[in-house]
Length: 449
Image (cartoon, rainbow, N blue to C red; front, side, top):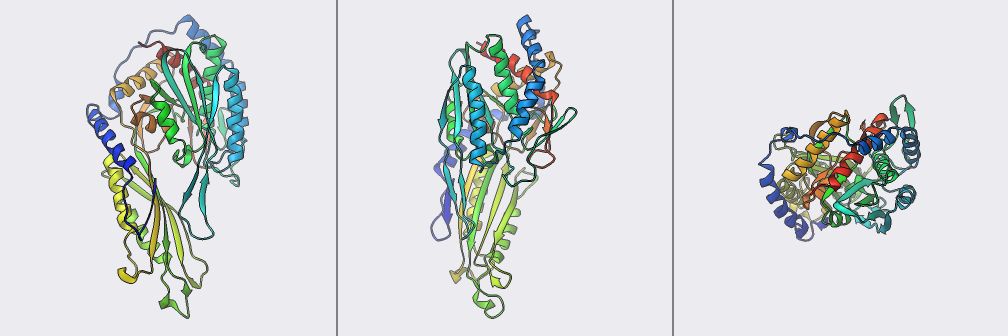
């Protein structure tokens, strides 16, 4: 992340440059594999043991309790900026983890300030995150979930409802359903004495929906200490995600000069006009052939209909398949922010302040992550669960863990559709299915040589 202004030189953060070197190595590995087809290679898993069948059967009997917990979590608003709601859910889950024998500690959130027009100060006050750990034998597993949603406290979409096998509500699939799956997989292992000797860490962050801007450092630190990463994002419609695009974002503010729109129009310098010119340049960066997409998703500006706007601002989203494309996009953004399109360039009466972040690297498949994916598919078949494999333009914390070398599977949560909209829904029976999948997967991963 960095700030910039047209009044001083721009620079690309060292973190982005070092990330490029890391990803260049990963791109070579990616070339060894085709797209989703590589993940369809045959893998045979031994039949379920007697104890595995007993654990799976126990999970099947927990559906009512799982739905009750999902309803409770869903009815607590956890929009990223609602610190009280986020803290309530983190506290609820922490209590459950402590009862399972985990040790926990709070990881401090951050206050993130971004450039804004007067009166619309854009400061993100991120709630604290939670790390729960348990020492044990065998492979070390990092399980990740986020408690925040995209729905603010004033959203009309606030409560849980059910119709047969379908649950509706904010976060039922993204990803409170995943939190329920994660917790009940751990409860099942604990019920049969299988959790005591496992080396497992749980990281629950509160800012995933805004790009893990505060929690990224914790995610990357923990990734370096573990052997496998399991992320409980939604599995969509029985889909496992193999590769993901990288994500970036920018916020920029154009400063102009106010003037009367009738009596002194020529004396004004419209920030909205300049913003519009910049938006065209930014949107033209989209290139479907290369896979790069850019979206100006939010704009704001001006003071009154009859006043030349002294300030205007915008939020921009970026998706890119390859690391260098992200760096190139930031460079182009800086060129756009540093240029004036709507008035004489040398007028000195327009300026732009900006903040940019490549907050999600591309998730590039490796031999190890493909092996983890194929193992999960094979275990799913033992349980009667058939998965398809897909690539995605959506980001998760699994992209962060995989980028620093941790083989990661990032779609172990419940099925669902309509995320980030009032149409969000989840398949209730998939809560049990995915918890069953997790208990077998965790048990077998722990025993790998």
